[in-house]
Image (cartoon, rainbow, N blue to C red):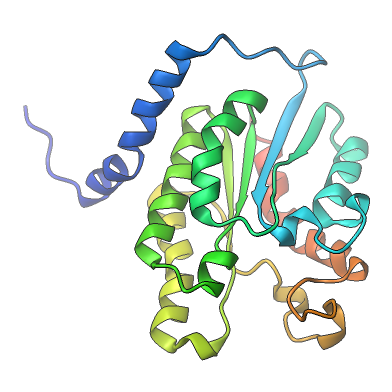
Length: 225
């Protein structure tokens, strides 16, 4: 019996089909990954840009480092790997995700990319494809996914800014993954919350960003492996 045509299934196959082929090739070409240092240790992998890498501050001050400290106390056995890179685009994330997933074997992947795509005016179709591939790889290694969005300033035009936000909403619905629509929502309108470049939050507000992320992230940690 031929299954009924499903636009959703067709889009899923288009998004992750090439990824699955790459993963199979990688599995055949590389040795098995090394086990974690501590038996039973579970991993949150954060794939972000400068907003998650802690640009302009000490490494321990960023919201991802604060998350690691918090989980060490509240969720023993969990570790946080911050694979965020300043200036990263979704294309860079899509190129790195297979290697990072192979290396760390994450149980949860936080994907917080897109800001640099938007600031450079990169095509939204490519951004959508890149994020879809990242989600597909995370799913392939049985990791939960938290998608973290961004918003663009109005000077880029309504069509682009609204389409930019829609990319995250559409992918969240398509893959059934939780979404934080705007990482910087708690501080978006506060001028003194940003460094001199008016783009990157200060160390003082990193805990508020973590407060914004935490409610969406913790349920993924509590799921059965």
